[in-house]
Length: 91
Image (tube, rainbow, N blue to C red; front, side, top):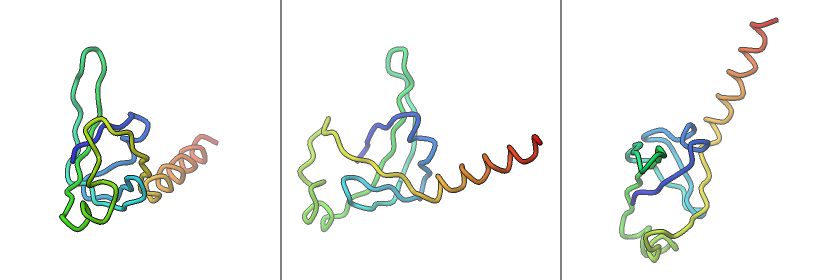
């Protein structure tokens, strides 16, 4: 399954990392960026097994369905820590 995401979220998504789609925790299997018109579009893919398709709402998702995405919290912690480290060096 391939999903588009904003640039703001794309910076937190890594291949083999975790992402949650509508409450279902999954592993990112691929990442990419393409150009549509004048805009760069970020995307990622997850691989869905039959059990996930059967037992979650993802099995009925049609192309264009809007979903809730939650990125890996570890990426946010790393960003925050490296941001503070950069500020300390400036002093």
